[in-house]
Length: 623
Image (cartoon, helix red, strand yellow):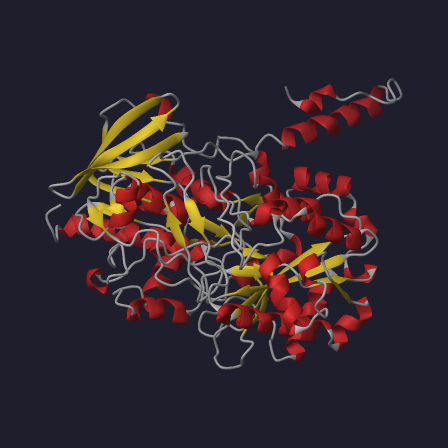
């Protein structure tokens, strides 16, 4: 039952006649305004209940996230190809649709709720010594729960992929794919030339309007980092309000943009609550024949005439390959799994680490006036007009790209920013829960925030040297895999992140910040208390406690030449040793890009769709 229908009227009978009619009209308007949120209407009808054992398709796409939705869209352009998308989760919720509530989706049934293994080197300030790794278990995958930041990375990222032996992944080539699926909607950017205008993914931009945003930009300019109008992959240093995958105040997840927008295609089918247990592979012929998928209490076998395309993400894709007999020989044998192909699946795990310990209290003049912070006004503005604070992600859309060592035009640190109003009862507790802070850390942050606005300047390590690994826990597909994050296993990462903290300190100590009376405060980290606050030793200790994921795991099915011994797929994303099995998602990145990974993952999906279409159109090889 809708809880909103159980409201009690605290003052019955005080509105009669025309005033009563106007009041009821307002209520009806508000009730109707929430209907589009969390609605399945923008998506395909769930085909899952109609699936039958032995059913055959041309392509089976496993996962509907930032890559899976895009590649399925591209393949279904051919009306003669029957494409099935299998998604383990359901439709996105209303919470997912509202941009500002992104942290509230974590820990729900739309999240796989992963936690890496404890380590003495990282996540010591989290409950049980474990960081939280949310990943989307929902239509749209992690694009239905991320921060909606659309960052391509820079030219060097992709040119380096090409230099590693991946032909066709250089910047000039991939730029075409980016622009093919982008649809820039912000009017004042139409002449920029940086983004595509006719694709499926809507991109918009806004200004948070908080005074501290101007202050950050002013301070950065004093240190030679200009405010730039939009992301420029050729000259990527500076601060900007990045574009977001938001349209008319609602999250534009990948499934809505790339699947729902073409739901009239009868050859494109999407099955929800469909958990793929393994890929069925003929060991002798090296042909991926189909999949075993659990739907409710039933397990079906579904078959693909052309290809199986694994788009389950950097955690689930390697898990699924290993369960299917593709992976490190010794590990699979230890799990009791018949080895079909020995490949370094699960290796090369990379992630952007963020440090959540640069915390400031500020004066009230750093934020909007109390009038603008009125929750009821914000809710009304959002429900009726799809605008206001709930329609964005506040200050989080302000990003800074900095080279703290001044040795390149390319950044080594990216800055995110989190701003909490005084006495914040929503965002700060929600972030603390999502990040998994232990009680000491969460309580200390809350206490600092009681009377003052609080700002977190969040340095992000863009090119980590440390690497982790995904391993099977058992041969049970429903068991969560072992995630070894690898954070700070290379000391150089600590040193570079420290330079990111020092640059943030310089910004705060510069003249523009003085009007806000900034004060550095330290979270409650007993093991670091004996160290001098803000010394190198203190910051390194704090990093071991409070550095965590920024939700960008990649690399576990690495793309590269077959003879390099470290890769899983070739440059056309075919798994080495197989003729019709591909991996298409962030796991194929040989090296993580210098920015948020959603855009690059969508590009991978689009490029894969084009390559698969080319392969079958030209019949370059017998499949």
